[in-house]
Image 1 (cartoon, rainbow, N blue to C red):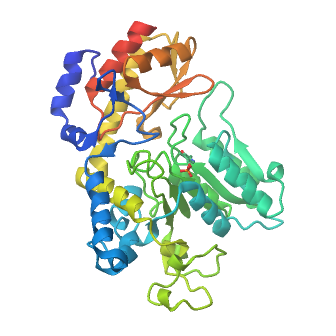
Image 2 (image 1 turned 90 degrees about the vertical axis):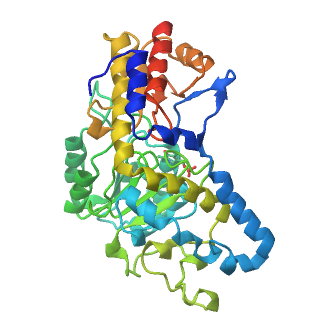
Amino acid sequence: MKFKNTLQFAKQSDKEDTLRNYRNKFLIPKANNKQAIYLIGNSLGLQPKTTKQFINEELEDWAKLGGEGHVHSRRPWIYHHQLAKKTLAGIVGAKPSEVIAMNQLTVNLHLMMVSFYTPTTERYKIIVEAGAFSSDQYAFETQIKFHGLNPDKVLIELKPREEEFTLRTEDIVSAIEEHGREVALVILGGVQYYTGQFFNIPKITAAAHSVGAIAGFDLAHAVGNVPLNLHKDQVDFAVWCSYKYLNAGPGAIAGAYIHEKYESNTELPRFAGWWGYDEKERFGMKKGFKPMKGVDGWQLSNVPIFQNAALLASLEIFHEAGIKALRKKSVALTSYLEYILKDIDPLENTLKIITPANPEERGGQLSIFMKQNGKKIFQQLNKAGIIADWREPNVIRIAPVPLYNSFEDIYRVGEILNSLI
Ligand SMILES: *Cc1c(COP(=O)(O)O)cnc(C)c1O
């Protein structure tokens, strides 16, 4: 695509965009009495107009049916967890039996680590990215302590090379090989939340498996954003939240994936609850945990229906738009943003993009390292109705989302940034 930094080009691109009408399916917040330019869909995705209806239907059924709604509501509550499976599976590249919406992200990360991090004296190390999201770091630290081990001796934190901002796949692979049979678990983000780097999941997974380690991914910033093939790539487990690119609302129900090869493995240690119990006998309330097959057997509690309803509203839109078409537009929008930033500051006097330049190595986000006046420029962007995200010490993150951002949004960001720098 040949870009131009003009309003006319942006408007023409919007006209030709086959997904342009999806924007009308979302509620776009206001700033200064007009529609904001919302670019933090990587932090909290916007509300689909249908979310209210989905939740209202559950409220109505609860009002009408009370406890009978477990079986007789339009989406019977005892089977509610099955409803998101098909679309979620398409989004992460898995089989419906390998995915489940449940709990919150950090809870799911803990549950997966209980099952997939079982250190021995020979094999105990965990390879992670340095500067992982705080909640993940706390989960790693406390899981390690839970096994009576010392995080300083267990965690191998991978840092970019000097003068570089993102990790090279070859360096990740060689670190895994270097620690070899001592590695129990390799766990990285799918897309790194700070830099926007999309890690090479198949290569990292293969490297982990070549030394006999487990490969897990935190897909918080990847799900609904980049193409994923968890099953084909043989990823052992993954977790994600649904309030970022998946638009399921603040504190939304999260998700988890476990590869089919563990489907009937009852040897894995796990923390169980009744919703993971064999569905056919669940209400027998018997002693002795008998798991459902596959990832369903990791469920703990009965489904938070309103949260799941909100997820279903959003997944309906994903299903209709198609993840392939969304990715195509996402690549175009992000590349357009990159083009415009380079056009207004070609010598990188102020703006240095730290997200990888290769579209295959990033999703719908650019992280911009501000060389000067970062905070001030960020605040002025905000005043001008552009909602972006500030990360200490000096990074602005801008996330164009193909479902509701337009090429004109991107053009406007450039126009205002240009006047500020
Ligand atoms: C957003 C995000 C979280 C947030 O955790 P919650 O359990 O959903 O509060 C955790 N880890 C990563 C990598 C994230 O991007």
